[in-house]
Length: 89
Image (cartoon, rainbow, N blue to C red; front, side, top):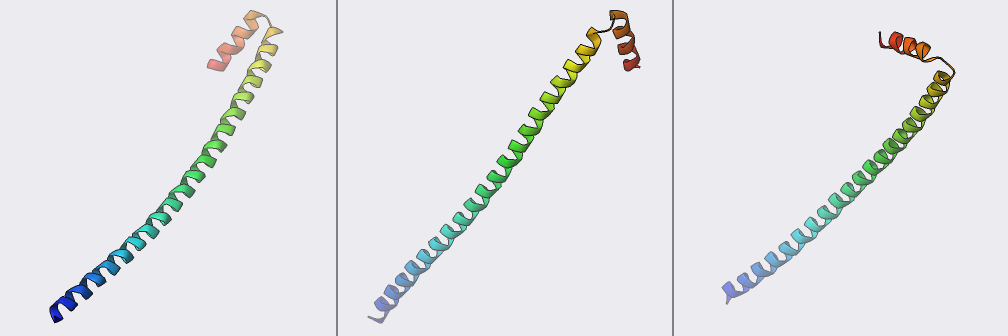
């Protein structure tokens, strides 16, 4: 009878240990998921900033191109070609 009581107690202890282990693992998983979610949010913010910077650069490039085209329209083709040749050197 003593052996059966010991086996019952051991099975109860094993069950409690398993439940505690499961609880701890669940908490670790929640913490890991929260960390990953925060990192993804941070990366999405960085991506949005990069997209905004790229859009600004595109707008600036278009403005510069229009300015150059406007300036070149007032010049003869030879003057434009001479300036381009000087720029390439």
